[in-house]
Length: 121
Image (cartoon, rainbow, N blue to C red; front, side, top):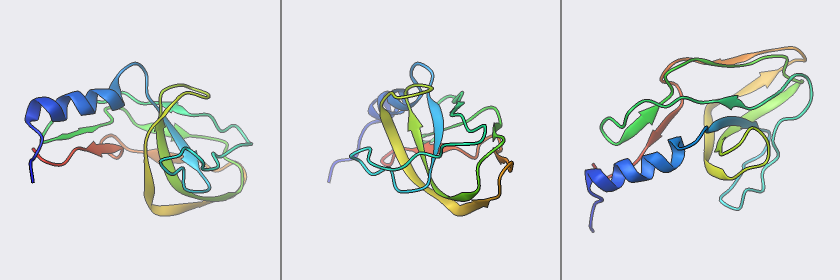
């Protein structure tokens, strides 16, 4: 099995961090087909992510991201999208643990908490 080079890993990471990527929250799995249900209601809005440089095949957020005024519900998934609304789903996955919110709650992702890792470096 062939592993990607560091140059390829950096190129792939640039696909996630190019332009202005946004972190989105989901109540159902976004899937590779982009068929999940994104959170709606309250003051929910996608949050712009600033990624740092590729280190060891990974990039992570360099500023904290806060989703304020969330609606009540269970949020088990996230996605990285190419725009503040609409746009392309660049990647997705489960949160480390589902967030159960009541109306008005907020969720904060600390610096370094949103990480994209490209295997093979």
